[in-house]
Image 1 (cartoon, rainbow, N blue to C red):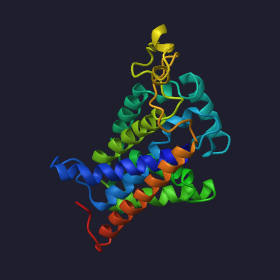
Image 2 (image 1 turned 90 degrees about the horizontal axis):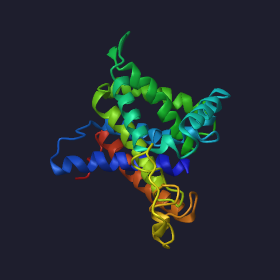
Image 3 (image 1 turned 60 degrees about the vertical axis):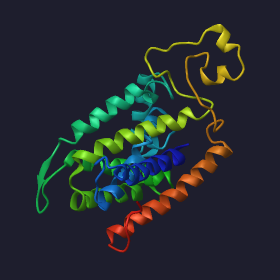
Amino acid sequence: MGINHATSGAAVWLAATATLPAFGTDLFPLEPAGVLAGTLVCAGAALLPDADHHSGTIAHSVPVLGRLVARSIEEESGGHRHGAHTLLAAVLVSVGAVLLGRVTATLPVLGLVPLGPAIATIALICFAVKARDLVQHWGTAWLVGLAAALAVLVFAPDTSGWFPIAVGLGFVTHLAGDLLTVEGVPSLLWPIQIRPPKAWRRTPGLRSLWKGNGYIAVPVLGHAGSVREHLLGVALGLYCVYAFGTVALQALHLGALPH
């Protein structure tokens, strides 16, 4: 479900930015502002695969146009949980985020700014806060996205490193979440869809992992929207509140990140 996709995207970003430097990797050496902004961007990006659903969160983001875009993506990708839910789509979106990161502009007071990531950040944060029901109306969600993007330009302007990673990581997190449901996701080699042999399809247990239509699943959460999914969402939500609050305190120089 959208709310849990957004939550899992935020949780994965917070976990990655907190954990990887502890291994001495030099990855994600972000200032608190970058961590906070990346959290919301990753949460929004975790909703992107469901742009192929005509009644998903993104389809409702803009009156009429949102549904038209979602319908187009749904038709071009072969339907919900088809082409837009593949590793190929994740690669294409990540490359697009890299290219978008190169779009800059010179603005009064701010000087040279990453205009492409700023515009994308408005939309992604808008999707994230609405999916999490942090605001009631879409107009408010867009205003929150705009305010957050302006904050990024002021406090975390160096988006070239973390922005495409946050987008790609959020997208892949969505695929991982769908993999854990009964419905599963397309083959890793999509558009090549390899179907299992007859003996596999007749074997209980195995046929739920590699389905007759070629989809793969590790259905520990059951069907989408199950009680197990909601319990996982609650656990991830509690982690996000703790981790986000810790980083926010560090940004205010009132605390420190856990090691």
